[in-house]
Image (tube, rainbow over all chains, first blue to last red):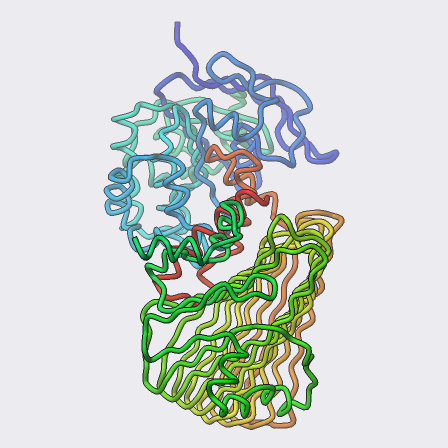
Length: 241
Length: 371
C-alpha cells in the first residue's frame, strides 16, 4: 500500500464568509512530486499557505494529515520542525536581517552555505538585507537556497519560475533536480508556465478551479490539454478528485 | 607586575559587577585597543592616561590650570549659540588631539554613577586640531548601588579645519536614574563630526538635543541613534544640525523601538546658508500598546538653493515577517528578536572596524537580554 506524506481530507477554507477552498481532497505519496495547475485566483496559493499554517484563513471543515498526524492545529514553526518547507512567491522584505543570518539558523555547516550560495550565484547577496532590493531572480534563488539548506521532507513551491529569466530557471531547475535526487522529499509545486516540468520528474498533477480540484493525471498530459483547450475543459471532464 | 598593581589601583572601589557594567558601555579595562582612557566615578576622577603623545587627556579642572588657553574654549560653543549652560559642574574630561595626529585605536572616556541620590555634573571639552583624526567611545553608566541619581553632561567639541571626530556614546542607566546630556560641536572647514548614540537599557528619563554647527565650507555632520524604550522610560532625544557655510552636508538617522516606554525622536536641520544638502530619517517600531513614539522632524531655511529632506515611519513588526521566519523554524519570540535586532542595525552607525565588532556584540547581547 502506498504511503502518503500528505493527505488533505475534505478541506474547506474560508476567509470571512467567502469559501476559498471547497472540500479539497489530495494525497501525495512519499518521495513523489505533485504539480498543481490552475488559473489565477483559483485558490492554489491558499492551499499551500494553509498547509504551511499561514494565518488569515479559517479551516471550516476537514483536516490536513502530515506523516499520519493532523497538523491543522500546529503553529508554523511546529510544522517546519516536522519537516515542511515552503518557497514563498512574494517573500516579505526584512530590513537589517541578512540572508546569511537565516542560512546560519538553518544549518551550522558554514561550508554548505558557502558552496550552495556560490552554486546559486547568491554569494554577493548573503550580506544584504533579506529580500530588500532583490531582483526577481535573486528572490527566487534566495528562497530555493533557504529551502535546500532547511532540507524539508516535504516542501511547497509557489510558482518557482515566475518573474525569472530562462537562465535562472535552468539554474534553479538543475539545483532542484539534484536536491530531489539526493534528499527524495515529497513536494507540491504550483506552476503556470510548466517550465519546471523540464527539470523534475512529477508523477501526478491536478487542476484547481474555483477552489475545487479536478483531473488527477500525468502532468505532461494535463499541461498539454490546458495549453490546447484552456482550464474550462478540465472542468468539463468532471473528474473531480 | 606594575601594570597589574596599577590596574587594581585604578579600579579601586569598583567591584566585578560594576566593571561588567562598564564593559557594557565599551570600557576596555586592559586598554589593549585604546589610545587613551579617562574614568570618573561620581565626582572623583579615578584615572586618566594617554598612550599617544599627540593626544592629551585630563580632568577638565587640571586642563584649565595647566593650559590657560583652554579658558578660551570653555563655554564658547554655548555662548556662540546664545545658550546658557550650568556652571556648577565638577569634573569631566578634556581631550586635546594635536595637529595632524591620527589615532588608530579609540579614546575611551567613562562617567560612572555610584552614589544614591547623587547628581553628577560634568563639563567635557574635546578639541581636535587641524587635520587630526580620532574616534572616541564615551560610556556613561550607573552602578547597581545608585538610585534616584542624576547625570548632567555638558560636552563641547571643537573640530578644526580638516579634522575628523567620531564620537560614540553608549548609555546604560537604571529605572530610577535621569540623564541630561547637553552638547554642541563646532565644525570648521572640510571637517567632519560624527556622533553615534546607543541607549538600550532602562532609564527613567533622558532629555538631550545635541547640536552640530557647521561653520566652515565643506564641513559635514552625521548623527545616528539606536533607542530602545523599556516600560516606564521616557526618552526625549533629538539631533540638530545648523548650517552656517556653503557646501555643507549632514545626515541624521534614528531607530526607535518602544517596549512600552515613550520616545520623542526629534530632528532639526536648519540651513542658514545656501548650498546645503541634508537628510533626516527616523524609523520607529512599536512593540507594546502602552508605549509612545513621537517623531518630530523639522526642516528650516530662508534659502532656495538647499536640498534638505526627511522621512519618518512608525509601525510594528508585520505578521508576514514573523510567519516567514516561522516557516524557517524560528519561534515567534526568536523571529521577533531577529527582526528587532535587524531593525537596530549597527550598520547605520559609522564605526571604525575596531569598534564595530565590539559594538555589534554589545548591542546584540543587550537586545537579547532586554527583549
